[in-house]
Image (cartoon, rainbow, N blue to C red; front, side):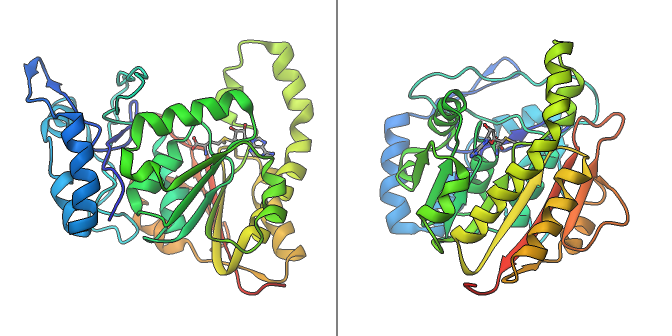
Length: 338
Ligand SMILES: C[S@@+](CC[C@H](N)C(=O)[O-])C[C@H]1O[C@@H](n2cnc3c(N)ncnc32)[C@H](O)[C@@H]1O
């Protein structure tokens, strides 16, 4: 069974599709039939158990209203349908014309229809290649965009979403409440741990780990409203590499042999990207790089990558007219315990 097919919609650009969250819909002023939440929840439980994969294809065919409304507004599917890395349930739409897609307000107990996401943020999720039944850890998960996308790619056996920061952890919980329907919620554990400790706490437990690390976040730093705070951040920038390295080391420890991890940041800074990965490769002999060049080729129409990168990494460059990137992605595999 796959996760909920929620549309990712990118402002002036990208991502998610229709699914269980579409309880009621008005497409361009036309009132659509409303789905009854209590019936949907019941169906989810019963048909997931009885029909498995067949149920996910049935429920994903619900509610074409959002898709046609998106098409009328100039949104188009963000990736080629034949992309081997792209699960059918992950419906992503992008638009090159500038403009803002309206965000939906959080309403307790009510699922949302779509998640607005930087299109490049899907690449770490696709690179992770989560399979049904796997134990998955999202080490730095808030606000939860990639967690939602992971659940659209597959149905993990266990999904641990961790966020250290108190406030952001509440935000993560809201995201999960807003996007994940009842039967899938039971698969998810949310924790507020320092990600650096999880390797010690749960050694060799996970098949897949996403380390979407705290980083310089070039795009948001550039628009800092407070210059003094911006200067302070820039001064502290050097310390981030050490935190990123420690998070990665913890992730390696948390992986079972044969498992793999994806490391991502939204900065162009080499010190936070390739240098951190090289340090891990040099210090952990049981970790091997995984080739991402096939995936990069598959999405090369949507994204511009920095040339000259190694095969296990890619860096999406921000481009004029496209409101996404930077995004660095690297993939590693743990080959043995030590
Ligand atoms: C780039 S953001 C994650 C974005 C998230 N993956 C998403 O797609 O919505 C990095 C997150 O790491 C959290 N963080 C910082 N230090 C951490 C630590 N030691 N352990 C776990 N998370 C940490 C930050 O609070 C921040 O929410």
